[in-house]
Amino acid sequence: MEYLPILVLVLSFIGLLLLSVPVGWSIAISSLLTMMTSIAVLPALTTVSQRMATGLDSFALLAIPFFVLSGQLMNKGGIAHRLIDFAKTLVGALPGGLALINVIAAMLMGAIAGSAMASASAMGSILGPEMEKEGYSKEFGAAVNITSSTTGLIIPPSNVLIVYSLASGGVSIAALFLAGYIPGILTGLFLMIVASFWAKKKGYNVGKKSSLKDVGRTFFRAFPSLMLLVVVIGGIVAGIFTATEASAIAVLYTLILGFWYKEITLNDLPEISLEACGTTAIVMLLIGASTSMSWVMSYENIPNDISTALLGASNNPIVILLIINLILLVVGIFMDMTPAILIFTPIFLPIVEKLGMDPVHFGIVMILNLCIGLCTPPVGSVLFVGVGVANTTIEKVVKPLLPLFAAMIISLLLVTYFSELSLWLPGLFGY
Image 1 (cartoon, helix red, strand yellow):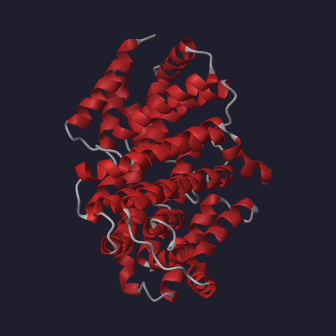
Image 2 (cartoon, helix red, strand yellow):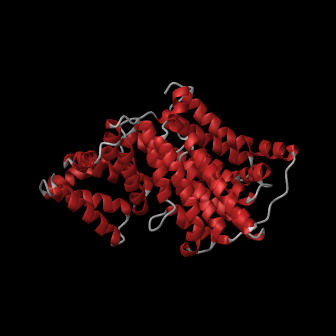
Image 3 (cartoon, helix red, strand yellow):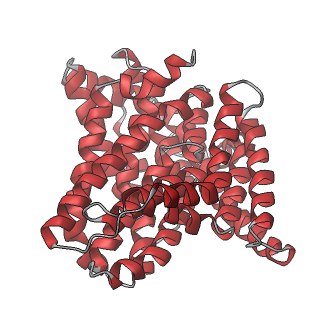
């Protein structure tokens, strides 16, 4: 095993992050430095640049800017209020009713908008003050909002599932979308159970019971928004259009919906488009840089070295999957989800395939694992959004976060070791 490339890669990347260099540039520079351990400076620079460009040359990636734009349109288009009203009629009268409303609404909003940060921002700003008014602690509300917002990254449509498809060499996006439903809903249910117990223990207020008429009325108001999931996923599964085409349809649908709800005007479109372009640019830089690093690692034989070391440590699939999960949990603390998927998929996917694990199953396990990292410092983007919206501090949110973290980890372990939770739906539809 060649230790120099691994040492240069790891130490340079960590060092750049400690110097507050943006993650995308840290990945690109550390890839270049690693390449320079094998070839001269100019060819290394050319190779890394070329790999960054070719990493973005994929038709499947066209879905990302469209889904980002549809998410922005959803976030501005009055969707959150309608989803919250619908969730209230379903679970508002249960212990911790407002917390449960937050989880259900975040699951729906995250799935429709495809963004955990959009969900955390919308749910936190709308439900946060209402929860405080009902006697809930600010920190508990923020903790529920932060963790539940990540479920939308598992429940499709999801940009990170598209990124995993790219990193894995073309795993079916339709299969990944179908595979995400049960694990995403399962995680949400565990979060609801913990939130309900916590709320009951603290004696938080319970809302009034809703009539069937109220449920029907709020469902009717939320129905056009919920139909986006049916249109997008139904169209992909039925083979009417591809995931990329579905993303363009999602933009058209959400735009029409925003105008129909009278929450979006023509004057809002330049600002919405600019925000979507900014988000897309950041994501694409991360994808290009991460693809370059993946190629450099492959060139230096780093994935094979890690694979040999892991398989040499144990031949027990349960132990190896546990080790991989622990590594990904640590990675998620320090690295954002997109680069983590692009860098570590080529390393770990060959290992789990040797163990007989389906690539679709592993993709769901990986993303569910990295969702936990979005809720942890120092790089937890959803954590910072949730804390900022709630106007509190990370230190105060940690205590109520811990039992919710436990719920997410239990869900992760169940999904890891019971493959049918991920593979049953894709199998049902022939994927």
